[in-house]
Image (tube, rainbow, N blue to C red):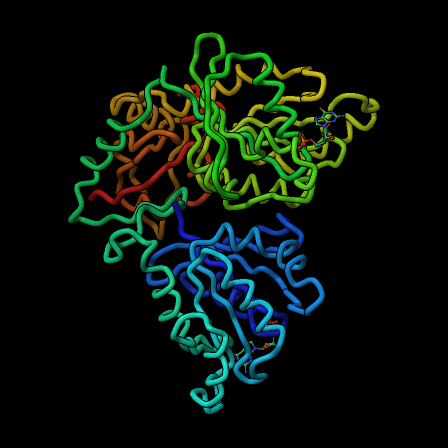
Length: 464
Ligand code: GDP
Ligand code: GDP
């Protein structure tokens, strides 16, 4: 699970400057998720090869009237979601009452807070930051210049250290579909075998995450599912970033429903305020075998939906799409939504789409068929001989192109892991294959192996 850092502070202290630097730096896994929430921006960043998630909480005015309310509205969730909070102040502007308001609030939180004085470029930093010690947030004021990058790596390394396991270890496998960096010193095939040995069995419990932006009908669907199936006891989560894990059964198959909405939510009237936790959603996706992404038919496809879809694809999870609130729509509206789906989501050709009404239960029962299909596909055992044979057929049907006058040779393939299925292709110049040919191979494997509902990841290894 990636550690999470939240940037908190009054407007103009440089939060978005720091956010942009972190998420757009040369080696960042650039991934921006627009529009997930009104007030918070999420991005993926990296420090010293360690990926983490950064949240820009937007502006907190910190004015006397209602600092608590404002904090609650705008960044309590982000603070709650975070492992570490960077409380940013402006070294040039000096200490303000807004800073004091935010500090007193942060002192009440049970979170690791780093006090960060920004804009120390070109000023006498030590004297400029002296006042900030009075905020009573630990014994250090970390000096940075976000605009220039000064002090940033050092600060992030410090903030993340307790949350990164084995800090010396290089980052795990990147989530790039076609990445296949070959390191002679690593026994890749043994690692792949380990992946395979640890993969879930076809008959294992399916961990199904119900994913969607606020108000698409997640709770309604969860309640509908639970009303019809046998529920075993479960625990309620402690914090914003935990989902509810609900063991259940359907047609004799064990499931764990990962409920990001919280089925008890409706009982608490004050909870109608948006309590959508991006981090919770991210963790649920990571932890799931299959994600059920819900889209609101009455609203069409939004940026939020696409961001959530991005998370799911990046994690390589199996996916079933449910277009909810299909009840009571005119035929021409239905047609419009279907063509919008084709236009905007046509690129995810592996996922089944269901049109449902969580409210009335229409179509809900059929979701299981696609969920099971996706799970079985994701965990399907594929043998080296089979994937090599399919590779031979694909190459026979359509030769790889030349690369600078040399023929790219694909030699053999083996399975590299499951959930999602990974196919490792060995060859020479294999990494120089054009994207179009990689896509061709992917589709060839999808059809030959009858894999539906899950992405396939193909990696290339150089073999002379
Ligand atoms: P936010 O409202 O907290 O997100 O603040 P911004 O990131 O929008 O920054 C506010 C202003 O401060 C902008 O004009 C930035 O260019 C400027 N700024 C941000 N970081 C630095 C810095 O390290 N040094 C200086 N001199 N200016 C900075
Ligand atoms: P969540 O925030 O994703 O958990 O969404 P909820 O389950 O709380 O649903 C939000 C609103 O949409 C509620 O008023 C539901 O009654 C309504 N809703 C949910 N599913 C459907 C549906 O299938 N059809 C219609 N018409 N309304 C629905």
